[in-house]
Amino acid sequence: MTTGPQPQTGPHQMTGEGPSRRLFLAAAVVLGVGLATYFILEAYWERQQPALKDPSVLLKAVTQFTREKIARGQPVPASISLNELVGAGYIKPDDAAAFKGVDLTLYPSALGTLPQAPVARARLADGSQVLLLADGTVQTTR
View: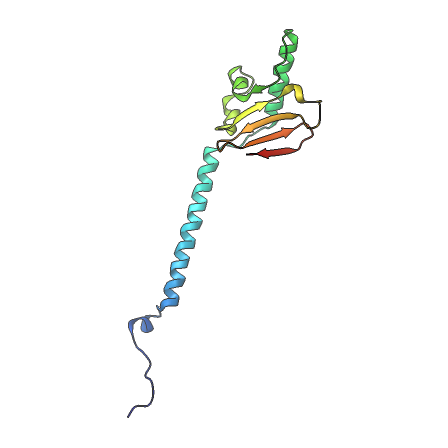
């Protein structure tokens, strides 16, 4: 005497661990690992790339550099690198640390000229360049 299909009583039915529960747990683990990786990399990047504490440091350094050149009767160069400003003592190495891995060049004579004249150029490690123009706009090139 059979009365129809009998319910299955396998191990996954008794513990509540069917395929959908295992899939949910796997997705939760993947999501957890992904979030942990994101936060670890974010913290690592922030430690490796310190923020520029006072952006006016660059402007002050270029202004002082330019004034001293003029006072000595020397021509103001068309451009000066961040490394040159650090080497000459106009910027502290700690202040320049925010630009680690970036080739930053400043153009002191561009201020007050054409609006599209570059004021600063940053060459990034991936080969791209970021230009700050005299009118305040920013252009990125590859």
